[in-house]
Length: 122
Image 1: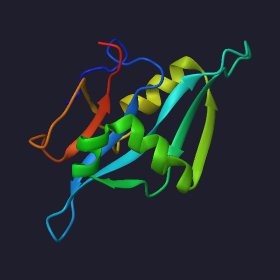
Image 2 (image 1 turned 135 degrees about the vertical axis):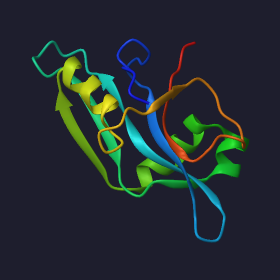
Image 3 (image 1 turned 90 degrees about the horizontal axis):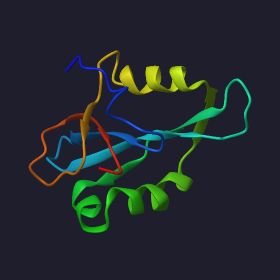
């Protein structure tokens, strides 16, 4: 999907993918999220990226993505990128190997494998 996310996402939206393991288990691969620091400096936004943050889809459906992100995120290595708002949107738009993640507001067990951004505040 090559639509822009700029008009659809806001800060603090989570980028993730749904993936199916070789054994058929569906996992949510939580990539990260961005936020505005409000510090007034040129690069006053930040993108927090998780490494190898996988959670079973069944657990995410039971607890919610935000709860699982809060629970599992601190357990993995994180990379922080300080950036401008424009650079932040570039990260969101091209996170999946140059393809725009699909904006969604909710998901269930029927969501197909792919890369998404969970848009909050709808």
